[in-house]
Image 1 (cartoon, rainbow, N blue to C red):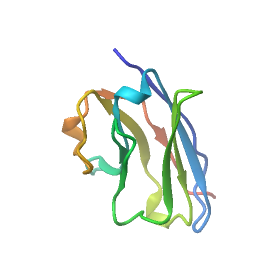
Image 2: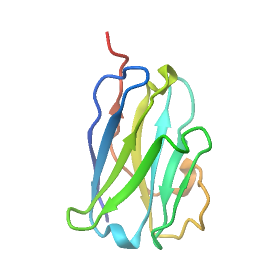
Image 3: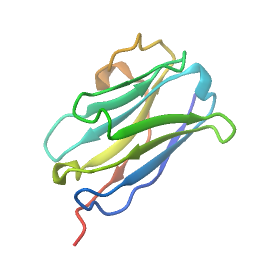
Length: 123
């Protein structure tokens, strides 16, 4: 079974950038997504890329987030720019063998999850 391992992040500064990387095996055969979860809330998909390489973003992050796959390193990278204060949250990557069909699937769709990375607000 594929394993996911997130890395990157840091402290959030409003208007600033942050980036994450999710290491995974066989990235080309998976639908992969990045989720954000704030305290007490469900995990919400921010971006996903299907097995065909097409990427879909939540409207709240379109134009500010970029999701890409690096096939040589087998990573899925999320670049976040112009961050809003409410972006402080737990970020997780998730994977599934099924096609995503160019829509953001809910957390219940995904079978495999990374451990997540917490993004605190910069002091």
